[in-house]
Length: 132
Image (cartoon, rainbow, N blue to C red; front, top):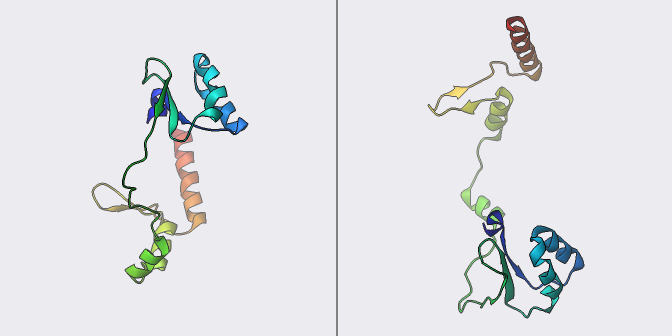
């Protein structure tokens, strides 16, 4: 969110490619800070941009309690759900190009094969050319 407001919190980085990227995204007046990024201690950061009146060196402290989070085990959760949906029905709906509308009814192109859909498309184009 801060980057959308032209503001950044920049922590320690020693990679020259990363520093070059930061020097491109921060304004010209803050480019002198890029050389000091490798010297920041753990937890230190610069806040720069529109959110602060001037570049600000700040300390970001670790929380006393780490969040109890992690990546979801997608495959285990899907296996616990049981049998998946009927794949053939899903593929058939894709072929028919059915899409639900706000009213809940389905719209379809009418044709179930790609060649039929191509003919329908050509007919629509021909009608538009005649009307133009």
